[in-house]
Length: 433
Ligand SMILES: Nc1nc2c(c(=O)[nH]1)N[C@H]1C(S)=C(S)[C@@H](COP(=O)(O)OP(=O)(O)OC[C@H]3O[C@@H](n4cnc5c(N)ncnc54)[C@H](O)[C@@H]3O)O[C@H]1N2
Ligand code: MOO
View 1 (cartoon, rainbow, N blue to C red):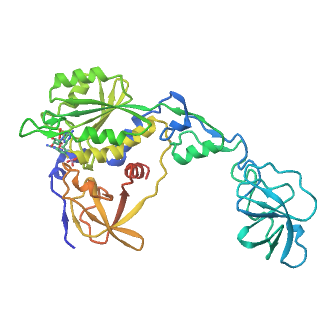
View 2 (cartoon, rainbow, N blue to C red):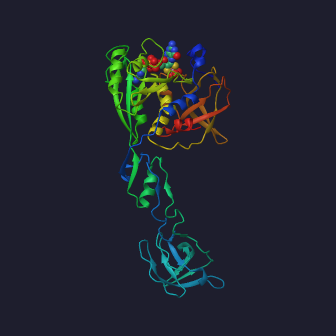
View 3 (cartoon, rainbow, N blue to C red):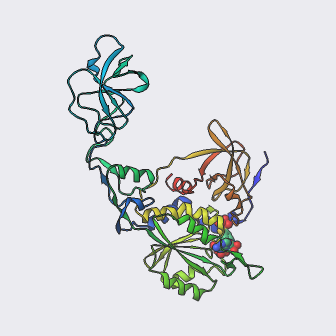
């Protein structure tokens, strides 16, 4: 297999790098700055998908509400089956879902019953119709069923008063269904997290025409808005900041108390035009940590601006994606009061060797090319540039090489973060591991 050489950026050899925070430390810093918002709202379950439950919910009644049939068939009493089969019974009537069971005659007999219909008192087994022979007003059963067969008993799923959903649950469609089946139509949820998104850089344009040969389109703001987009966020596009200290400072002062979280991209590194951290200081903001042993995403910084949490992601688009998934998604979860995600760590086998320097934890887009004993075999895409999203767009996930890993061999296994359709898997699995 050909060896993949990750594009050298020379930053691994910098002395400064020795002082970089580890990714794990940086995740703790990012999470530590975020505190759950306290405001709650009561909303209809129709609008609750994606929101975070503010209060635990308990079952008002036992589920199922009453003993009912799990099959279309005949409901019987096992004690009526004397001697050896087949046993033949008169059909005493029909019970459909929604019917109220009537007082039952004492004589031996069977009822035709449908799925979901209440089991009449004293009856204790349902034989599915495929195992019965109906003959006019009589029905025969060949083999003896057991007590309780095909009956869903009252309270066997949830007893009345039992915990239905714990506070902090991110409500998904199946939760909405569960609430509806329990007769709960309104829920108390946390309010959406207000997020402001800032791009920086004189080279950026938003319209569809580039007015200069050195201009590029703003990729980061639309991507970040899409990443944030969910019902538990209320996202505002704050536009593009020029590379100008006074203008940056003015904008930061203007927005300092309007959001729970401000995310910026670009101007995070050490260049003379990277004025954002200076502007944050002038605007009375605070930087708590800067620069992480992460590739891509090294220049990320964490801080505060007024009442807002402030996370400064680097300008390179792939660094924005990785930084969002590792740090920002965790911050949004905490602000929204969501419980930590439960995820499993997945391994994948590298198809080819990788030549690289140890020092930074590295996330690389990769695609699955096969399976070996159940593990995905993956191939790295692109050449390690954080300036392009093209390899990620073709990827099935990202592989992570931890900071101490140097050259790797074909066949080595590493952590693998599949990109789900919502792309939530990457960050969730990383920061909770
Ligand atoms: N001397 C050093 N130079 C650099 C270092 C370093 O440690 N020492 N780090 C490099 C790394 S790693 C990264 S990542 C970048 C990040 O720099 P900044 O956060 O200051 O970002 P910019 O310089 O503003 O932009 C970097 C790159 O990304 C493009 N960009 C910016 N915003 C957008 C956007 N909204 N949409 C699309 N593309 C965007 C920008 O044009 C630049 O090409 O610094 C390295 N340098
Ligand atoms: O590796 Mo940087 O941190 O994205 O180019």
